Structure formats: structure tokens, C-alpha cells
Amino acid sequence: MNSSESPPATNLAESSDSSSELPPTLDASMQEYYKLQQELLRLTFLLMGIAFISVWVFYSFNIAINYVIGASTGVIYLRMLARNVEQLGREKKRVVSSSRLAILIGVIVIASRWDQLQILPIFLGFLTYKVAIIFFVLRTVALPNSN
Image 1 (spheres, helix red, strand yellow):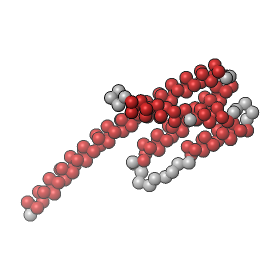
Image 2 (image 1 turned 60 degrees about the vertical axis):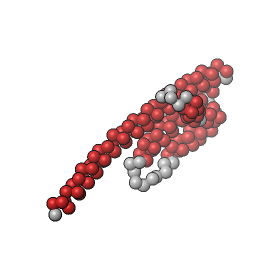
Image 3 (image 1 turned 45 degrees about the vertical axis):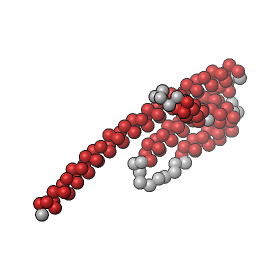
Image 4 (image 1 turned 120 degrees about the vertical axis):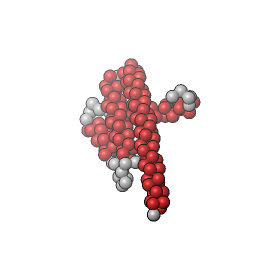
């Protein structure tokens, strides 16, 4: 009986070793995810600044402010999306969050009602985070060892 009890104890030790190896791997991947998230946010803010100055120079300050409103909405959307992606592995039941899209819809509705706001610069500003993702992917493909 002792010999039959010994293998499960060994299996428990092996399973606890494998479970202890799992969290550091998970932590490393989460650290990599947080690094990616911060890099995307920095790139989004950089593109937002460049676009704001360009729009201000070539069009007007009012249109540039509309662009910043849309880009800020895009950053909020990106942060909410990142939070949902972070929780994806932790939750058993996957719930599709529509609150992210509600933010964009709310800003567009306010822009359509308020005379000083314009819908097109706000929408194009919202898409700034997507341009940042495209730049990140192109840079990663072109220079894979730069990280």
C-alpha cells in the first residue's frame, strides 16, 4: 500500500511543480502584454500629437480640437478594449461589452447636436489608435529583432 501511495505523492509534487511553473510563465506573458499595451498607447499619443499640430497648421484650431476629442475617445476605447482582453483568460463566461462602442456613438451624437463640433474630424481622430496598431504591426514585421 505504501508503494501505491508513493506515486500519487510524487505526482502531486510534479503537478505542484508544474503549477508553480505556470504562474511565472503567465506573469511573463502578462508583462509582455502590458509592455505591448504601453507601447501602443505611447504610439497613439505620438500620432495624436503629430496629427493635432498638422490639422491645426493646415486647417483650423477648431477642427484640431474636434480631432483631439475623437482621438481621446479612441484612447479611452483602446484602454477599455485592453481591459477586456486582460480579463478574457480569467473569466469562464465571455461577455461582449457594448459599452466601448457606446462611447463612440455618444460622442458622435453629441457632435451632431452641437454646432461647434464636427463629425468627420472626431471620427478620424477616433481611428488614430488603429493607425498606431498598423504602424506597430508594420514595424514588428519589418524589424522583428528591434524589441
